[in-house]
Amino acid sequence: MSNSDRAPAPAPLVHVAALQAALEQFTRERDWTRFHSPKNLAMALTGEVGELVELFQWMTEAESRRAGEDPRTARAVRDELADVMIYLVRLAAVLGVDLDEAVRTKMAANALKYPAERVRASPAKYTAYE
Image (cartoon, rainbow, N blue to C red; front, side, top):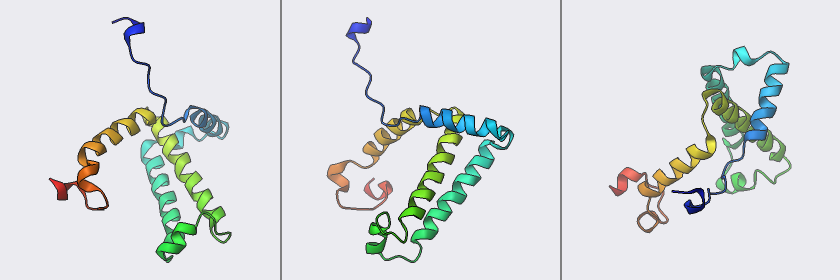
């Protein structure tokens, strides 16, 4: 098949190359590469997710929906989301995971597990539909 016969590649869903490069530079400048093992990065990611969860711990559903706009919580929510993203992207880079491909593959698998016509308006796990 010639190049002209191939369908164009879909636009990336996840663009992290610039962030990966910035994180790599930041890490090298501090001589932290030795500490960025997958184990350590996964643990750091978990800690940051825990800090994000802590912000929502005692909120009502309605309060949680406004947390990104409420001046009392918005900055902390943004900071913790940024920390989660930083560690996630760094972990993916260290492991050689293409996040765009991983997300596309997972979304396709989820579409098969959760067909819209069967799961609409239900939060049940896919095993409930099998």
